[in-house]
Image (cartoon, rainbow, N blue to C red; front, side, top):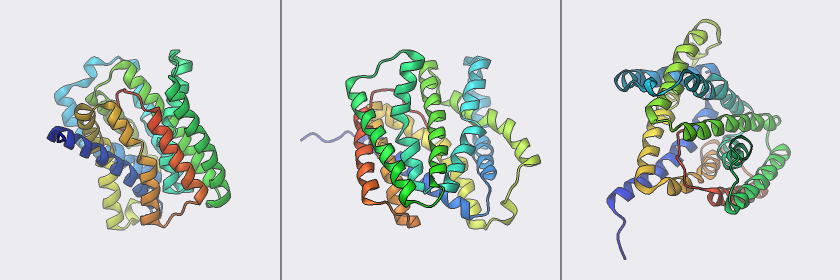
Length: 297
């Protein structure tokens, strides 16, 4: 029996690390609501701290040279404060598990819809089956959340769905425009840091002064560096070594990972109906996988 090459092993390790990174990000974002920090603080960490690393890299590589002003404006808006504040607002109302279910889980379905209406790209029969399972699972999960979850959880689910719309748009445009990692970092981090940080510092409410030191450091490190920078490197390595299809297949575990961590770390519970729908959702995601460029969240 042939052994897996070391490069493939590192690729699989990177892909599964992304699952943990994104799943744990759901938990970190959820517990931020108990730290005294505002959603505006979390957005400031995401753009401002990441920019400390991104600015020197962008000055060296000059990624704006290959971009039109229109492309910079569109990608920066899609990955900007409207998107991330919408997502963080979802955690105010809904459990962490719902973030993975409605953001990551709905991505294939939304991407298929966008592809049909915007680019006239018809999905394969395999994608249609996967999308149907995803849609059915989402409907069941939304219904069960309205019955068993805390009051107002459905509001968070709507916010997460809007976030999925933003992220799907980003994935489609990034693939269509063949954007590189540094171009994405420039638009998503540097441009938004320049635009958002002055507004946050001057006018938006902040809880940094009253937040406990441990909670503050966790949010600063994780929101500022892990998903944007480390996650991007892991995805790039995984896609290069084991292929986009295998990477996508493994990333289908994010909703389940978020649900498991939510139960273990936050005491969040899912009903039998939700667990069954989550399993079906994961199967639908795996069926929907197609070989394409995978980008960071």
